Length: 339
Image (tube, rainbow, N blue to C red; front, side, top):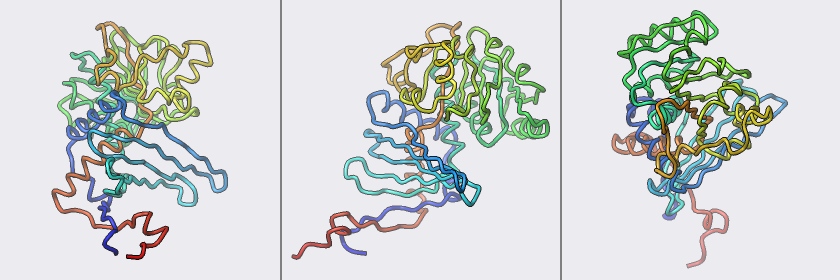
């Protein structure tokens, strides 16, 4: 290691797992999106598919100048391992020097759930107390636990296609939440009468009938990250005030929006605002208790960099991780100049 090398912190997934509460994730993500609403740069997902062996490589970028950090979230899924691996490098946004490299696997449901909760807090009615949750995966768990930090929940109806999974999920969440959590036999049974509808699936087709949405309902859809997945039908899209995490995603991977546009149910002006614009006060959020609102949370580096930096700060406070050295390009590529 030379005198010019920069030390960064390498943090393993197990070191990050219990570093922060869900409230802290929500606060960090909310602040990240506020900065985006005031002009912080962010780019939507770039996804490179591979046919032999089947898999894909994904990356997205964000700079959060007020926090002083920038980063890119990358992961490879499939290929020979038939699994996924996540990496989050963080850089100082003033100096450009590396701060940390995080194994981003364990934080994923938390930062994604926190994003959904920020959307709920910005768009759902203040008195919303009942949730329809479609999905019973780790991502569904993250969405529900985070939503419970921003609304006083009384009832949660859970539906997923496997009876045993939804019943196990309901039993687990009943132990963790004050709300009554019940497994139901259909998405329709969950959605009817719900104040908040959360979809956390990888479904290629809509998971509920948009005609079931009642006035005043808020929908958070998190499985909208590809043109091949579409949790929300065109009826729901048409009825709702539509808010994506990033406007640019409506041209690349916001499946439900793209299909509704192709079907003529909506036009390109259907985007009300980005989530960050609402948090920054640039655009209004919910303007009436009767509005139906929809937050399209397909995933960005905004929440990932914001949450990752928060975890990095917690790790430094606790003396976690190990240091790794990075050489500046001027030295590594050119060699040190003669003195």
